[in-house]
Image 1 (cartoon, rainbow, N blue to C red):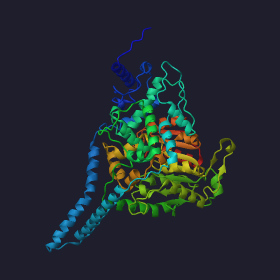
Image 2 (image 1 turned 180 degrees about the horizontal axis):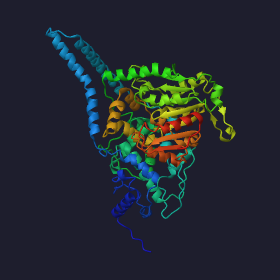
Image 3 (image 1 turned 180 degrees about the vertical axis):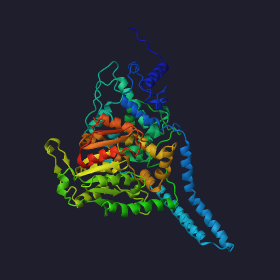
Length: 610
């Protein structure tokens, strides 16, 4: 048989066309990514022939592409609902400039010796309060903008973080049958040596085919292109990648990281692995047109809001904390940096909590937003349904717009939170001593006493407990968790960088993500390496009797299809430990029947069938 060698430009074009056909529907947003006439994927002839015979993507992969494609600006369209929300929000925001105008008008009338009525004087008082608060808020924003985020990554942990960053999705892949044109595209001798140096199990790639490696490379590009604001992959240059990696690994600008020899060496190693995983040789230099998301290094996305906005919100939270929750049996306490509400049922003892499935202490960790106002809809059913269970509710004031609280601009750190929760558990007898399960000798696992429910950003604090104090927790329930696949950029982009095109996006940006306390937390104190959780480091989470995951397909903050795909790659499955809602958006995964099932699991460890 005679082999005809095609010209390079025709071969790349054929490779591009067949690859796009192979991933049609899943990777539409990357239609420009594969046009790389100079530095694209491997130019192996075998790889080209293999890719032409590739199969269509799996159902799971197609689902995973749904939310990612929605990152492209303009797909949603601005509806009448968007414009109505825009008008209402800006009318509220006009309170502040109107206050300055009102003060000027009041001064003008006073100088003309015109009588001022009592109502006008009261309104002037409100205007003065609004204007004063606006000036003070501007000052606080200016101070937070000057704050330089400090890396919390210990030098000894950086290589392990690099490993997790680029290898978490490879460690679960089974070796595929050997086909024509085997190609080990994403591994080299240096990478294998790097894995061995960390004491990690080697990744088996024997038998990987060119098509499978190419598909993984394209998926890798798709996930990480979000950090570059979905720029065409061929537009990304070497310095752009190094800038991103320096922030991901060290939370530092590239120029600072290069000054340290150890950091510079690891940065170059990470860059070579990044090239290998993406099957791309990046051109030298920097492309000024490519934007890079470096969350804690970018300008603060905070905007002032009227005083009345905070007065109403904080007043409602205060009434719920002092009136509503006490009527449900909860009391208010402070331990170190953690303020919390707790209810201890009459007759409950720590011994009963460890042995009676209907007396397990339950902790609810809330997400960011408006504090008790939005979380009462979950907290009340917990209290009313689990009447024989102690319930603890830590209040994260730095994510609840508690503008007058001492911790408003002082978010919990990982060490503070874990220390104080451990102290709280010891104080109330939730876990005074470790209680071993009957199969402890076989599994080496010692279970504690808490059943933890977390929603959205609450999963960050949940993850801290899993990493640093796993013996405290018996059961885990994650609703809309952000800690899985956090390093892939979807949540970061959706929350901080996406231009609003729907009413919900606009409300998210104006009411939550640009609020000073939340912006300070997300952009100056949110360290992804501390917050990201990898299942292979905590395999106990795959046990359906230990952990359950609630996800909504229409979530616009968490890439729920991708999280589902990630969990399923480790053996989790629908109906066992993944609870999938086709119609639920963010915050809707725990509603009605789903909430009832979740609370049954949190209280007893038994998940009712659908």
